Length: 270
Image 1: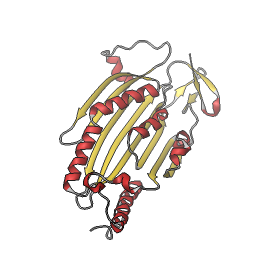
Image 2: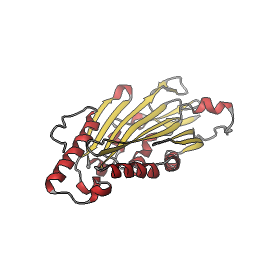
Image 3: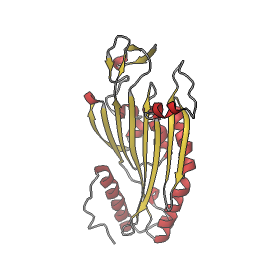
Image 4: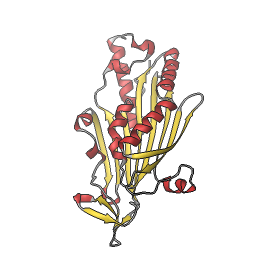
């Protein structure tokens, strides 16, 4: 018998394992200005060192701890010329659950719903000097653990100019009376799990299909501080008019990522 907390705080009793699948997927974008070719290469090298597979593996391990899961296997890869990936299989820490051997063929079937993946994508635009780093993160869990608990740690692990998040609860679990339950926690928006102090720095947009347990939130930095976006030789203070142009260029890049479409840039080139 397993107790879980249901929507509106009511407790239900399950016969066996909680079969609900909770999936959190998001992109985090970090933008900077690296105008010279030398600065662009330095930027790519910095990203490769700062967010290599070893660092991603450490982040994955901490996410696993935060959501009260157990890490059973990790695969990492550094790519040439750029980028890194980590894939981790998880086990839900359920009381009285049988001990699962790492090499048991049953593990693969059980863990196909419990995993973390991270992939990085650094790139730059030679024409504008805009460099963009993207990390794609997917956390899928079953049982009582929820990936939403790790949101703030992941925000703190990456510089976040644009954040696009999807959260879905899939499947159902059955109680001891045979009744199906399609969600086991209160959620009306992903924003419910984000601190107000963090949200205050962003423009935030929601599309939520609550009846289908499908939640979408996207966020973009509201105020850009010029010095925070310069990389390499570009850290030398440009003239006021050039600062204004670069800030407009950065803001346009961020808005394009936020809206997922190209905007008019004709007045932004040198």
